[in-house]
Length: 586
Length: 42
Image 1: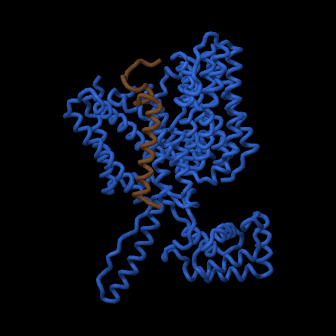
Image 2: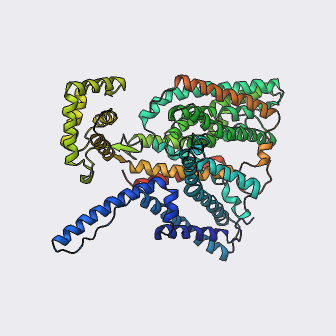
Image 3: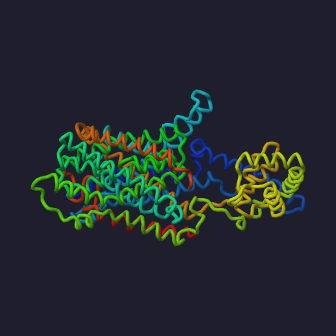
């Protein structure tokens, strides 16, 4: 069978990407980008104003000394960096796709591995093009609209935020629309099947974002919660299936899907209980329709209940059935941060780790309930069905814990370092003097009283004890003397104090500025986050393309009733447990 | 079930088995990790 299709599509996608790269590099789309990347553009304006002022002073100085005007280069703003990133990605992928597209047009493929793997490329290009459009276009457009509607007073809330209209949701919806309305083009069909591979790669890489300390904090809790809900869900499905006479293999395979980790658990458990192909399809249909609903509903409920990243991550990781949909809900809830995703994946991975236990339980249950069932070798089934990518995640986490990727303290994506504050980021001498003036005022009776009351009201701490005015005096003294933050405790304390009523605005501004200068991007962690976000975006768009109307319809009947009851119990039960017992400790 | 369009893999994967897909993802993920370390460093 020849897989590679003669189609100019890949070449066209490559050319479109190259054009976008060129438009960004030449600055031809700066107007559009300034609308799409509003926050980065604000930074650009600030950097440009500062640079223009410095250039003017330097030019005047040079003119006064009779020297030629200095050649200065404007530093890169976040806006420039974003455009550069878009241009680089477009050139790399556009060039590769264009070249392969040209070659395949001229090539006469022969049956074999090369033909098979080359035929995957157009599908990958197709999904990646959608991922570009969604992440760089639709996502910021919806974010801007949501904000504009709220600012204009038409709505009192940001609809884009509440309905989670970000790249994750838009990507999956785009995938669903393409497969159900337009159909996936024939030349792209083979490549769409790579979505799960990229999702698994993303899950393995997620191990680089964990530190042993974080996992230790969550580990016990996730094991207990997941244990209760996984075993409980499996037990209820088995009980309901028997009562509703849904058939042993149907019930068993549905219990694995509803209890453990959705589609992969269904596939893993199916040989153990001799499930028929139609039963696997019913179960997958039920899981997908339920999971899609949860993916939209969970983030909205999370925002309404003002849940934090740890609470939401724990809830999504426990209550949602499919690994990919857990990631989708977590990213939809918190698209810019990765904290929710990390917590959700810890719970999700813990749940996946229950698979061998469930497989053993189901095998025993099936053999007991099915007369004449073939004997299955439990040990062999466990060894052959254990998802190896979970071991990859653990291996990556183990490597990460040794500090090989980044030093401890970098895992939040930013790290504190007073030593690395650049000369130009130091607070000005004038600001130091104003801080010293504020220090004197706060040491006087009235100021000291207000400060003491404020520290108590805000429950501010230094290490393990309550903060005192003396701690604040020392922190301000150090800041005024060094013109930068030197310690993390000092930074945390003064950031809190900067909100003190009556504090001089310049002094408060200087504290903010010094704090900002002392926090640096953890470049390695940021790069891993970027990779993971792209892999998930790609995988989820591809996942959307696999959710056909046919698969959704297959969820009808008894499996849907059982799935709906168990899914609701699990979602509501885990929500209650999370709200009662899970605190924000990351 | 969906019609058999592909001789290799399944409708959900280009790989012949889940195990093969897992190992491929493992190799790819480690290659990315090494790339990040090499090009971006600590």
